[in-house]
Image (tube, rainbow, N blue to C red):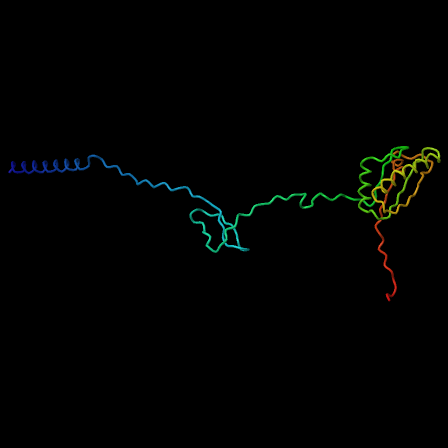
Length: 212
């Protein structure tokens, strides 16, 4: 009886050993799970394409190849670009500031006209060749009356010659002003000896009465 049990235990141990060997054999070599690698996608390309035609034409920003394709009837127009504006062609800056009244700053005891005042007077006279012109010549309080009138005459002649040369058809009226014989501030003295050339606009005269 004891021998029979011993044999059964031996057979059971042999079966267990065989099973363990089979499991160890089937698990070798080890299997490593590897995740499938995703394929690299190409970078998207973008473009500007035309949609519509005529007055309804517009341009859209889209990703290729999903951009809309113009049909055969759709005219493909170039993309709008900004056109630079030529100031000369557009007439910008070609007009001068023509004054109705030009003041001439004469030096003390002189009838010399500066270049800037001469240019302003020439522009005003050329703009109104047939107008009426009022010239006012002045002298400050310094000097005897005879000398003051001599300076006034020379200053009036200097202004009149410029106007007559640039506007031959102008009607020139001259006035003379002599300052009172009392001292004034230097700034006011400079105002006393300045000359003035005025181009009054033509009067709009309406005749009243019944038209026959």
